[in-house]
Length: 219
Image (cartoon, rainbow, N blue to C red; front, side, top):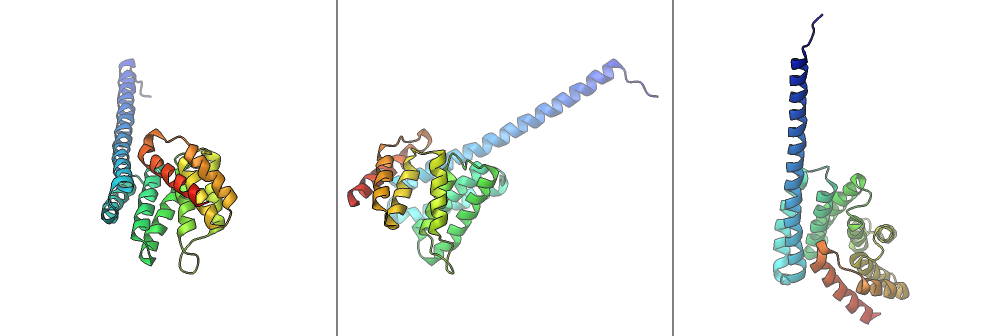
């Protein structure tokens, strides 16, 4: 029977420790890399949807959609990446408009639903807000996947997670107005006006606050 010396055991343990450390370091570097890319994409998306002239938005969002698609392929099990893929694709579909945008809207829906499978909170409710808007705005069957009941469920789920969110209350108010429920629409539009902008989404939240004020004037 082979007997291992104390020095051999110590060396083996050292090798294992180094291997574990290298694995953890590599994982940390990988996470930092995609988080940095998401941060950059988020900032460019916010600048595009809030500051860029309308005639330039579509081409810029198309380029962002290509970038985030490649990032999602490399990080297919990272919920945050998939949520941002869904947000950017949904924005691109909205700018494109018409039936030609349905495929892009469907890809956005698929990315967001996969993100929710990985993270039921959906990036603090952001996935549910965007899904609600997609199901609200897309045409219904047989042309598209739009469904007001599903949109309602998505908005309600987002409200459970982040009841004072400017984005969820504004988009839900717009949905309720279309559904003919002006009293509830007014309540949620006012919540959006009174909401606190997120530090990570200051520009887009403040833009939605202004949209909510305009919506209130229509109710």
